[in-house]
Length: 254
Picture 1 (cartoon, helix red, strand yellow):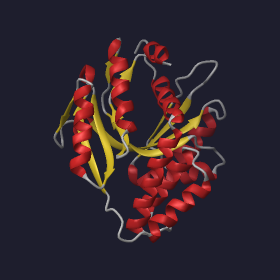
Picture 2 (cartoon, rainbow, N blue to C red; picture 1 turned 90 degrees about the vertical axis):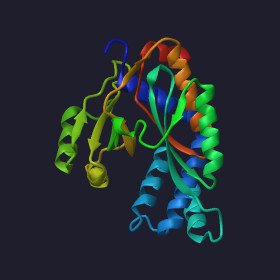
Picture 3 (spheres, helix red, strand yellow; picture 1 turned 180 degrees about the vertical axis):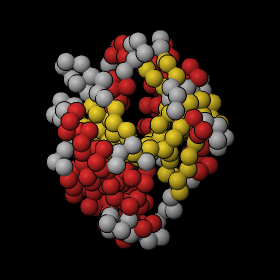
Protein backbone atom coordinates (compact mmCIF):
# COMPACT_ATOMS: atom_id res chain seq x y z
CA UNK A 1 0.00 0.00 0.00
CA UNK A 2 1.31 3.41 -0.93
CA UNK A 3 3.17 5.22 1.80
CA UNK A 4 3.09 2.21 4.10
CA UNK A 5 5.89 -0.19 4.98
CA UNK A 6 5.87 -2.96 7.55
CA UNK A 7 9.61 -2.46 8.08
CA UNK A 8 9.17 1.29 8.64
CA UNK A 9 6.58 0.48 11.30
CA UNK A 10 8.84 -2.11 12.95
CA UNK A 11 11.91 0.12 12.81
CA UNK A 12 10.05 3.06 14.34
CA UNK A 13 8.80 0.85 17.17
CA UNK A 14 12.30 -0.38 17.91
CA UNK A 15 13.70 3.15 17.86
CA UNK A 16 11.04 4.26 20.33
CA UNK A 17 11.80 1.31 22.59
CA UNK A 18 15.53 2.05 22.48
CA UNK A 19 14.83 5.51 23.88
CA UNK A 20 13.03 3.92 26.81
CA UNK A 21 15.65 1.27 27.56
CA UNK A 22 15.42 1.65 31.33
CA UNK A 23 11.67 1.11 31.24
CA UNK A 24 12.04 -1.89 28.91
CA UNK A 25 14.65 -3.50 31.16
CA UNK A 26 12.38 -3.05 34.16
CA UNK A 27 9.58 -4.87 32.35
CA UNK A 28 11.96 -7.63 31.24
CA UNK A 29 13.15 -8.09 34.84
CA UNK A 30 9.57 -8.35 36.04
CA UNK A 31 8.72 -10.99 33.42
CA UNK A 32 11.85 -12.98 34.32
CA UNK A 33 11.12 -12.85 38.05
CA UNK A 34 7.49 -13.91 37.61
CA UNK A 35 8.48 -16.77 35.28
CA UNK A 36 11.26 -17.95 37.62
CA UNK A 37 8.97 -17.83 40.61
CA UNK A 38 6.25 -19.81 38.85
CA UNK A 39 8.38 -22.46 37.18
CA UNK A 40 11.86 -22.39 38.67
CA UNK A 41 15.08 -20.71 37.66
CA UNK A 42 16.28 -23.17 35.01
CA UNK A 43 15.44 -21.98 31.46
CA UNK A 44 16.07 -25.49 30.12
CA UNK A 45 13.01 -26.76 31.97
CA UNK A 46 11.05 -23.51 32.20
CA UNK A 47 10.12 -22.41 28.68
CA UNK A 48 8.36 -19.24 29.85
CA UNK A 49 11.56 -18.19 31.60
CA UNK A 50 13.58 -18.97 28.49
CA UNK A 51 11.34 -16.71 26.39
CA UNK A 52 11.64 -13.92 28.97
CA UNK A 53 15.44 -14.23 29.08
CA UNK A 54 15.70 -14.18 25.28
CA UNK A 55 13.57 -11.05 25.04
CA UNK A 56 15.76 -9.40 27.67
CA UNK A 57 18.84 -10.29 25.61
CA UNK A 58 17.31 -8.79 22.46
CA UNK A 59 16.70 -5.63 24.49
CA UNK A 60 20.46 -5.62 25.27
CA UNK A 61 19.85 -6.13 28.96
CA UNK A 62 23.15 -6.91 30.78
CA UNK A 63 23.77 -10.56 31.68
CA UNK A 64 24.33 -9.69 35.34
CA UNK A 65 20.97 -7.95 35.49
CA UNK A 66 19.27 -10.98 33.94
CA UNK A 67 21.01 -13.28 36.42
CA UNK A 68 19.89 -11.15 39.38
CA UNK A 69 16.30 -11.19 38.16
CA UNK A 70 16.36 -14.99 37.89
CA UNK A 71 17.86 -15.32 41.37
CA UNK A 72 15.37 -12.89 42.86
CA UNK A 73 12.42 -14.67 41.25
CA UNK A 74 13.66 -18.13 42.22
CA UNK A 75 14.32 -17.18 45.83
CA UNK A 76 11.38 -14.85 46.39
CA UNK A 77 8.88 -16.02 48.99
CA UNK A 78 5.90 -14.16 50.35
CA UNK A 79 6.22 -11.34 47.82
CA UNK A 80 3.50 -9.81 45.67
CA UNK A 81 1.45 -12.28 43.64
CA UNK A 82 1.41 -11.19 40.01
CA UNK A 83 -1.16 -12.30 37.50
CA UNK A 84 -1.26 -12.02 33.72
CA UNK A 85 -4.16 -9.91 32.50
CA UNK A 86 -5.13 -9.15 28.90
CA UNK A 87 -6.99 -5.95 28.06
CA UNK A 88 -8.62 -5.11 24.73
CA UNK A 89 -9.87 -1.89 23.25
CA UNK A 90 -10.21 0.52 20.35
CA UNK A 91 -7.99 3.51 19.69
CA UNK A 92 -8.31 6.52 17.37
CA UNK A 93 -8.99 5.80 13.72
CA UNK A 94 -10.75 2.53 14.49
CA UNK A 95 -7.52 0.81 15.48
CA UNK A 96 -7.68 -2.30 17.66
CA UNK A 97 -5.28 -2.85 20.56
CA UNK A 98 -4.46 -5.75 22.88
CA UNK A 99 -2.48 -5.12 26.06
CA UNK A 100 -0.62 -7.78 28.03
CA UNK A 101 -0.07 -6.84 31.67
CA UNK A 102 1.53 -8.30 34.78
CA UNK A 103 -0.15 -6.86 37.84
CA UNK A 104 -0.53 -7.44 41.55
CA UNK A 105 -3.68 -5.29 41.59
CA UNK A 106 -6.06 -5.68 38.67
CA UNK A 107 -8.42 -3.01 39.97
CA UNK A 108 -5.63 -0.43 39.88
CA UNK A 109 -4.31 -1.50 36.50
CA UNK A 110 -7.65 -1.71 34.70
CA UNK A 111 -8.53 1.75 36.02
CA UNK A 112 -5.27 3.19 34.73
CA UNK A 113 -5.59 1.48 31.34
CA UNK A 114 -9.21 2.63 30.96
CA UNK A 115 -8.18 6.21 31.78
CA UNK A 116 -5.38 6.09 29.18
CA UNK A 117 -7.80 4.92 26.49
CA UNK A 118 -10.37 7.57 27.41
CA UNK A 119 -7.86 10.43 27.31
CA UNK A 120 -6.68 9.25 23.88
CA UNK A 121 -10.18 9.22 22.46
CA UNK A 122 -10.44 5.45 22.53
CA UNK A 123 -12.35 2.95 24.63
CA UNK A 124 -11.47 -0.10 26.69
CA UNK A 125 -13.61 -3.12 25.85
CA UNK A 126 -14.43 -6.47 27.37
CA UNK A 127 -12.59 -9.72 26.80
CA UNK A 128 -13.04 -10.80 23.17
CA UNK A 129 -13.68 -7.29 21.88
CA UNK A 130 -10.79 -7.37 19.40
CA UNK A 131 -8.92 -10.62 20.14
CA UNK A 132 -10.57 -12.35 17.17
CA UNK A 133 -8.73 -9.92 14.87
CA UNK A 134 -5.32 -11.28 15.88
CA UNK A 135 -3.50 -14.60 15.62
CA UNK A 136 -0.65 -15.76 17.86
CA UNK A 137 2.56 -16.51 15.98
CA UNK A 138 6.28 -16.72 16.54
CA UNK A 139 8.22 -13.98 14.74
CA UNK A 140 11.96 -13.91 14.09
CA UNK A 141 13.73 -10.90 12.58
CA UNK A 142 16.99 -11.21 10.64
CA UNK A 143 19.02 -8.26 9.33
CA UNK A 144 18.72 -8.22 5.52
CA UNK A 145 21.88 -6.11 5.31
CA UNK A 146 23.87 -9.11 6.62
CA UNK A 147 22.12 -12.14 5.13
CA UNK A 148 20.80 -12.83 1.63
CA UNK A 149 17.73 -14.71 0.51
CA UNK A 150 19.41 -18.09 0.00
CA UNK A 151 20.93 -18.08 3.51
CA UNK A 152 17.69 -17.13 5.24
CA UNK A 153 15.34 -19.29 3.17
CA UNK A 154 17.46 -22.42 3.53
CA UNK A 155 17.86 -22.08 7.29
CA UNK A 156 14.25 -21.08 7.99
CA UNK A 157 12.43 -23.57 5.78
CA UNK A 158 14.63 -26.49 6.78
CA UNK A 159 13.88 -25.63 10.40
CA UNK A 160 10.15 -25.79 9.77
CA UNK A 161 9.21 -22.11 9.50
CA UNK A 162 5.69 -21.38 8.33
CA UNK A 163 6.52 -18.30 6.23
CA UNK A 164 9.44 -16.06 5.29
CA UNK A 165 8.57 -12.48 4.38
CA UNK A 166 10.92 -10.51 2.16
CA UNK A 167 12.53 -7.32 3.53
CA UNK A 168 10.86 -3.99 2.79
CA UNK A 169 13.80 -1.65 3.25
CA UNK A 170 15.69 0.58 0.84
CA UNK A 171 19.24 1.03 -0.45
CA UNK A 172 20.39 2.64 2.81
CA UNK A 173 18.74 0.03 5.01
CA UNK A 174 17.52 -3.18 3.39
CA UNK A 175 15.34 -3.92 6.39
CA UNK A 176 14.73 -7.34 7.90
CA UNK A 177 13.63 -10.79 6.90
CA UNK A 178 10.56 -11.71 8.95
CA UNK A 179 10.16 -15.40 9.70
CA UNK A 180 6.84 -16.62 11.07
CA UNK A 181 6.20 -19.86 12.92
CA UNK A 182 3.48 -21.59 14.82
CA UNK A 183 3.95 -20.93 18.56
CA UNK A 184 4.76 -24.60 19.18
CA UNK A 185 7.51 -24.53 16.53
CA UNK A 186 8.99 -21.16 17.53
CA UNK A 187 11.80 -22.30 19.81
CA UNK A 188 12.91 -25.10 17.49
CA UNK A 189 13.04 -22.82 14.45
CA UNK A 190 14.86 -20.13 16.42
CA UNK A 191 17.45 -22.60 17.74
CA UNK A 192 18.02 -24.04 14.25
CA UNK A 193 18.55 -20.59 12.71
CA UNK A 194 21.10 -19.70 15.38
CA UNK A 195 22.79 -23.09 14.92
CA UNK A 196 23.17 -22.21 11.22
CA UNK A 197 25.28 -19.23 12.28
CA UNK A 198 22.65 -16.59 11.56
CA UNK A 199 22.32 -13.76 14.06
CA UNK A 200 18.78 -12.92 15.15
CA UNK A 201 17.89 -9.26 15.68
CA UNK A 202 14.73 -9.99 17.65
CA UNK A 203 12.40 -12.93 18.23
CA UNK A 204 9.19 -13.33 20.16
CA UNK A 205 5.81 -14.98 20.32
CA UNK A 206 3.47 -12.18 19.43
CA UNK A 207 -0.04 -11.27 18.34
CA UNK A 208 -0.29 -10.45 14.64
CA UNK A 209 -3.36 -8.71 13.16
CA UNK A 210 -5.07 -10.69 10.41
CA UNK A 211 -5.95 -7.38 8.76
CA UNK A 212 -4.51 -3.93 9.35
CA UNK A 213 -6.06 -0.48 9.52
CA UNK A 214 -4.37 2.33 7.61
CA UNK A 215 -3.57 5.22 9.94
CA UNK A 216 -2.83 8.58 8.37
CA UNK A 217 -2.83 12.29 9.21
CA UNK A 218 -3.21 13.36 12.82
CA UNK A 219 -4.43 9.88 13.80
CA UNK A 220 -0.81 8.69 13.51
CA UNK A 221 0.20 11.00 16.37
CA UNK A 222 -2.88 10.08 18.41
CA UNK A 223 -2.42 6.32 18.10
CA UNK A 224 1.33 6.54 18.71
CA UNK A 225 0.72 8.62 21.84
CA UNK A 226 -1.80 6.06 23.06
CA UNK A 227 0.65 3.19 22.54
CA UNK A 228 3.49 5.16 24.15
CA UNK A 229 1.40 6.01 27.20
CA UNK A 230 0.26 2.41 27.60
CA UNK A 231 3.85 1.14 27.30
CA UNK A 232 4.97 3.65 29.92
CA UNK A 233 2.61 2.09 32.46
CA UNK A 234 4.60 -0.07 34.89
CA UNK A 235 2.08 -2.92 34.76
CA UNK A 236 1.88 -3.11 30.96
CA UNK A 237 4.27 -5.59 29.37
CA UNK A 238 3.33 -5.42 25.68
CA UNK A 239 0.98 -3.57 23.40
CA UNK A 240 -0.22 -4.99 20.08
CA UNK A 241 -2.21 -3.09 17.47
CA UNK A 242 -3.52 -3.54 13.94
CA UNK A 243 -2.40 -0.02 13.01
CA UNK A 244 -0.50 0.35 9.74
CA UNK A 245 1.09 3.78 10.01
CA UNK A 246 1.84 6.02 7.06
CA UNK A 247 5.64 6.04 6.73
CA UNK A 248 5.90 9.76 5.99
CA UNK A 249 3.78 10.64 9.00
CA UNK A 250 5.93 8.38 11.18
CA UNK A 251 9.05 10.17 9.96
CA UNK A 252 7.56 13.52 10.96
CA UNK A 253 7.14 12.29 14.52
CA UNK A 254 10.89 11.62 14.75
